[in-house]
Amino acid sequence: MTTSYPPLPLPSGIRSRFVEGINGLTMHVLEAGFESRDRPCVLLLHGFPELSYSWRKVMPALAQAGYHVLAPDQRGYGRTTGWDGSFDGDLRSFGLPNLVHDALGVVAAFGHRSVAAVVGHDFGSSVAAWCGIIRPDVFRSVVLMSAPFAGAPQLAFGIADAPLPPKRIDPVHQELAALPRPRKHYHWHYSTREANDDMWRAPQGVHDFLRAYYHHKSADWKDNRPHPLKSWSAAELAKLPTYYVMDLAKTMSETVAQEMPSKEQIAANTWLPDHELAVYSAEYQRTGFQGGLQWYRGAFTAELETWSGRSIDVPSCFISGKQDWGTHQRPGVFETMQTTACTRMTDVHLVDGAGHWVQQEQPEEVSRLLLQFIVRF
Image 1 (cartoon, helix red, strand yellow):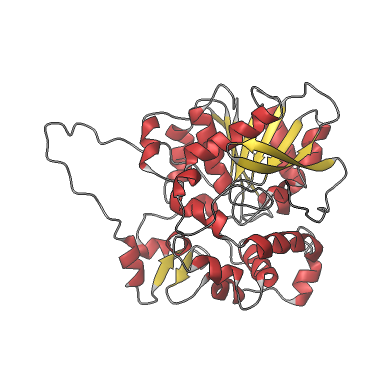
Image 2 (image 1 turned 30 degrees about the vertical axis):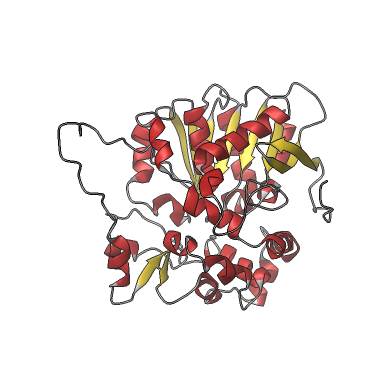
């Protein structure tokens, strides 16, 4: 039986659905363009710490253009249930192949054998990328947003007659901690037992935590002026804003609290007014953040080596905010994505006036770019 939830403040033409039996989940899905059958499908996959609600501003435009638009709360998030949210639980269900299974299950549940495009933002970009590698017959084009794709991991090659090299431990975390201003990478922080309580029990409350977090990573924070980094080294990573490379002794709630916008800035915010932010804060106050944090611990596993040597060979596109550091947070990946990880990347767009939350900050332009790409294939 589905839990009773308060209605979401959705634009006209978007409805909220619950579908049982999707890869062990009862999936909460926002749906637009449902008025007529036989529409091509577009699947929208959100990232962290967001929800299906993050797509509310682009769904109507895609539906008006003739698409059946589906946006689920992904495993670990929002109103989707059936996942294990305990820190000590089995992380295998949060591996990327299983997250692709979730996406495939949504598409099938709504009667589609293929989709015109799978669109992923932030960590959803990783899921969209692996949809394109694992099931290119179903996901006929891929749009990656805000998180470039580095490609499938490589298998150890030519080791049969050579000594097995020692397992390499990335020294960058020790190097970051040893800097004159000691630092830590947010991925490392998000993998710790303390990360969920840091945000869920934030001293400023979940609502103000999210307000500061979204502000800090948006174009509204004027120090977001991204540029390529020279290398994966402590000295270069330390150039990233503190929401990516944190002060060693600070929690994420403490980190973003230093950048909390003023009351006047909050009142002037048109892309995420307080009544819309309240949707996120209410959901995360109820669920906590551990479901989303599981992805940082379980998504990238040795199982992905099964697809070593594979690339995204369906048409692909990349869209990010011009003021989004996510494009450059892993040195060289933005370039690798365009040259080898994706063999048919036709469009790359950096949208001015948008930081990390590009589909919320600049929804009209994102909708235009999505349709410009999707209709060609």
